[in-house]
Amino acid sequence: MSYIKLEKNLYQITIEVGEDINGKRKRIKRRFHGTKEEVELKEAELKKQYYHKGKKLNLNDMTFKEYSNIFINNYCKTNVSKITLKDYQQMLNNILPLLGDIKLKKIDTFMLDNLYKNLRVGKKGKELSPKTMSHYYNLLSIMFKQARKWKFIDSNPNEDATKPKLVKRKRNFYDNDQVLELLNCLAKEDIKTRAVITLALDSGIRRSELCAIRWSDIDFDNRTLYIDNSLKVINGEVDEEKAKTEYSVRTIDLGIKTIELLKEYKKWQDDFIASKGDKWLGTDRVFTAIDGKHMHPDTTNKILKRVLEKYNLPKLSFHELRHTCASVLNSNGIDPKTISERLGHADASITMNIYTHTFEGNKKASANVFDNLQKSVATN
Image 1 (cartoon, rainbow, N blue to C red):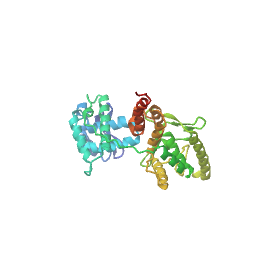
Image 2 (tube, rainbow, N blue to C red):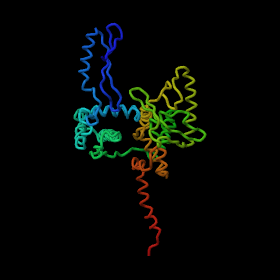
Image 3 (cartoon, rainbow, N blue to C red):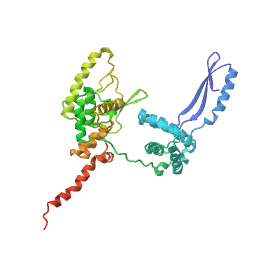
Image 4 (cartoon, one colour):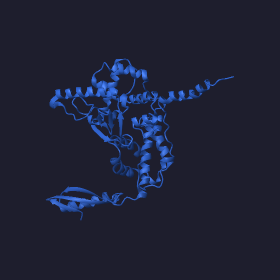
């Protein structure tokens, strides 16, 4: 008997449905209103319905769909951000109809190449971009790598699959003269606009990092900014998380003028908070919405776009202020390693690969070094 009586004509039926991959018992519980004879019939019906699930999951029989559930629940929910988890789930919604029923151990490179070919077409026949396809490739790489680590499979079939080729997009940035022009225009703007854009230019931080900064992260005496988390928004919900890597956690030295500007902005904000009284809902955050709550990262793009259009300056996204920071530092003789540490990259090679365009001038200059030496050699 697998039911208990809760009260008159109310029973709880418990059906054993085996164990999950971790050996944990799985049960399904249902409440039923009726007589004892009726509940016994319902119990038999439920046992028949869930009979096929009443076995321990066999690794040899595990489908990709079953593995994807294990991956989401046992890996993603503790290792990736809410935004990344949402992206993974959306991609799996497109992958599972094509791969879900295939046994995990039977999936090979040929199947994955066909999967990518089918995914590339897109739902409405519009071919997906190489960047989007690379996201699918990276997700499956992580999934199969983790499956191998858990010893669900012996090898990773995605290692030999055809990797989408990304076309390197030329990154946009301002040169020294354009930065100077932007700063001159900013001098005519409100203090918050000046602070947001100037800090981004000086530090090279990401917009998600800028929106997460608190006043306690700024050391005015030593002129430093401490970065250890980022702020993103998912369906209106704030996702503030600690930096994923040790390289993203960093202390950035700021210029004297930037520090003076931040002090001025802090005084303005304190006065503004006092004027709002109980209507101020904020905390210690540096950049906020008008009521003190978090500033949405998209707001940074709107702030910059308004300034550029107002003064008829060349188009630039807020993220491209980061490229501009790297370019200005490089053009003024700062070495790649120092730039990479400021930007929060693992090493200088990443910086040089991402910002190749900013180092082109140095490449040409280096080609002239030996030529200039030769010009100084006396000839007969």
